[in-house]
Amino acid sequence: MATDYDEVRPDVAEARKASLDAVQSANAPDARSVSRDLDEADTSDGVELGGADLSNEELSVTVIPQTEEEFLCGSCFLIRHRTLLARESKGVAYCRDCES
Image (cartoon, rainbow, N blue to C red; front, top):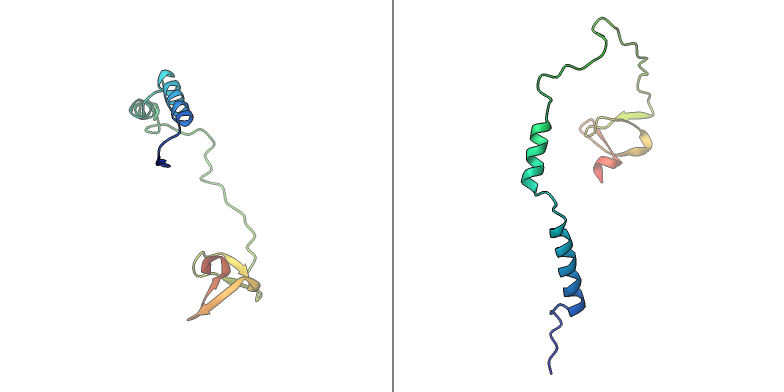
């Protein structure tokens, strides 16, 4: 007698049916109703954010210049240490993270 190895075993088929019945009986919302609820709850139009008026404030940041041991990656535009230099072509340096 030939055995069909692609056929689902009876115990697995019963477990699948039981789990499907449990999901269907849970009265879970369908995707359309969830999408509709999200659209109705979207209140981003016309909402004013609270907080103080910071338009007259100045930002004070100390800028540390790039050292000779560092380079600017031409791909991610981060300042990296020279040990992370992967290649340099036409005056543009690239870090190891961007080259991998």
